[in-house]
Length: 605
Image (cartoon, rainbow, N blue to C red; front, side):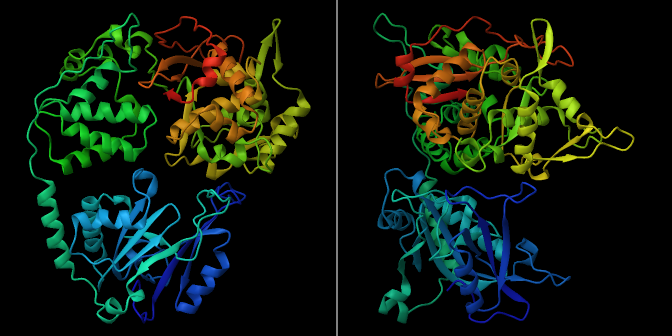
């Protein structure tokens, strides 16, 4: 069903393989690059041999389209190499549908929108469901993928799984993203197949694509019916008691509850998406909330247009910077629009002004390849110490892309000094410093090279080079204030406290839960130590803590990164940086018991 019975002479089936460790984390080679590659099969026997060889240590995928050799007689999984395809592919992720659990429920989701379209096969992918619809084979793969995307839009499946080079998991292999409740990786299993039923097997035929296209057009017409405009229902955000209720961003919260008028809907949609992502909602939940919000607008927009707008905002490079107080908005129209909804008395953001942009001069980035569980945890072979993370922070800060000026041990030691009793000294003893460098070499993070020509062959002139795979971010990085590293260098925070800080920032970057239990599960240092670390990070002015009550009355903590120039004169500083920090007031201590009760940690970046 997936491939033709016979392949042409230069035609192959492509398998894509990604290696993981025993916990499902990607494995890296000596250069810091993920271990992943392609294999090509000419026969079903070759295909089976490849799958059996790699399925216990690798994610195993096959391309939905066959591939052909290029003019250089080379094989690649690129659009130019794709030859033919004969299935439509629908991919559902279980985590995007909290109310659906079984294959039958997901099948109903498709049948509710496309009742006449026959589903030839269904597989449990381990964390979702894959559906296949057999169509007539075609070499116009891009046209087929456009049709595939329309189907996914109609039924609510993953529209990112409609690429020309799309791959899918191979039945019988394992989904090695994360371990299941039984401590094992879930297997990709067949749920249903047309060949399991005598009638459908006997009457099998591929579905006509024009028939599917007509069914989709009909479903879209139903979806695109213009909704009636509902009258504005004002939201009473003020509390009735003596306590003044405050909201993280009142203006956007207010419009989310009341809807927006024509001419303002798209602007407010961007702010709503930003706020929801900022609060830790998954992309799927953001889509659901925003579509419900659209029904409150006056009038509602076409749902399909709203879906496209939501996707564009979710892909926005600076999504967390779409919000902010009206005083900071340069566009006069948007400024007045936001100001009209403002009530500072009930808005935490207006009072606290925590939503700062991190500019390059005072910020640092770090590849998320360094922030896997196996590297963050303290008891793994690949575990990295806080000192290793500090050195990598300094390297990311000071080694510029394309620079030919070597970065030496001497330069690194200079930036790791702090002033104590008027004298400069390294923030760790020299033996620990050398051991940390050796660990970074062993963990495939850096290379230590001989001194440049003309330089004395001494330790301080040794050149440091970051592994190439760690320099390419590919939008997989965290960003934080360098003043936190200065606090570490000044011995105001410890190694574990620096790792707690990086763990929080990394989890929020990935929209993952970041409770005390989650941090401890990653680092393995104990919940009491996590709490103590968070308190000291606040005391060292690396983060701020705002406590708030949920609508259910539970306490939770809102965490914000904080910049300070407190350590600038105590650590290496090649130039004085003036930073606009609206809130420099000392943060009050937070009740330790309430920190334990606060099961939700959020980071305002």
